[in-house]
Length: 358
Image (cartoon, rainbow, N blue to C red):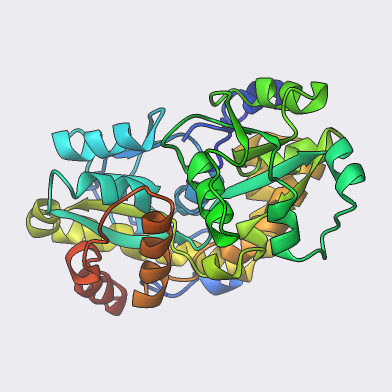
């Protein structure tokens, strides 16, 4: 459930991948610039896996580019790319990956079979799925960006709405939104499974096969740039008050890794913290890195940056409030039947200890 774009691909190739999926040591990041890597012969290699290249995981890329991992004595190669969050979780479970970049949905699923999974940092505080509608839909509904959320949701009643598939984050957002207005997304709309192929999704919207799409960001910015549609509802920009502050993008591992490789875990957390500080302190440099990371046209990248920069985490620390919002959404959307206790899932003491070291 991340906004996924393959690095350094053309726009067409990148579109094929959009839908896969969701304070530091030294303190030098605040004013920008890379750090001088630690010249140590004993660099520890850390294998990271993630569910595709995603804006949600952009912070990890910044940490690589700015040398923050190396400054912690860590060699972090380009993450192993997998097609789904479930496969990233499987990499953690099998031991093939030390740390995974993913979404909290992955952890909620994994904890059912392994209670030792631990979230060790925050990456993104927003639910990264948008409702994108056709130009014709907007003309007929007379809705605007300033229209009430309830009016926007009610306008979706009876419409054909594309999703990536059943039991996905895209379907979950529809379920959640329709419940807000006392409706059932399964019976009060026609859901069309389109898979994760973003080009097919754009074609479906453009040809009228669907009236709207529930699709992973930044699909909406691409649809707008191509003149195919507009973003009707975006949790990222705060359109759904109940989801503001939702912790979504996270990185996680197992308690056994925390126990046996504490310096690796602490170093990774500190490097991410420095990258988060850099991102919020250096907008021009950050947007340039994002352009390089996504490999898209600058106008699209700029729109993506403007939409997502405010919800990139400012610290790896995760609050109880943010966790509660995420848990309640997953319950309401039918993704889980019980929210695991915050103290069980989030390794707060590990994060706090790592950030306290310099």
